[in-house]
Length: 99
Image 1 (cartoon, rainbow, N blue to C red):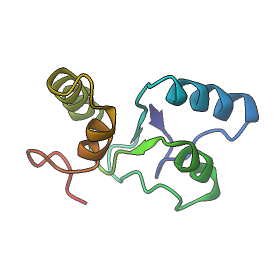
Image 2 (image 1 turned 90 degrees about the vertical axis):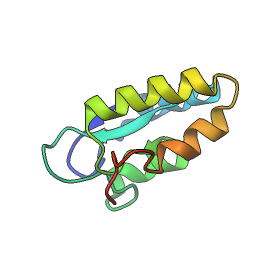
Image 3 (image 1 turned 45 degrees about the vertical axis):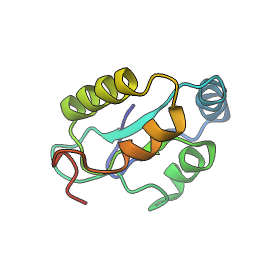
């Protein structure tokens, strides 16, 4: 999911509820900034607190291209280990995250 600035998204109840429902079904949602420079910092502003609360994974300073590639690799390598995939998304595997 591409968000504003440091990971902020709309806080409308319907939006948060839709994301929450998807996460409860096992969908992994990675929060990536749409900015060319900067990083997602979950809970830096109130607009990302609900995302963190429901289990959206913070993507740090990963690019959208690296995020897609990383998700494809992790989901293909660990298809039945969602908790492991979520954990590895927040760790640098090959230098894709600098923070």
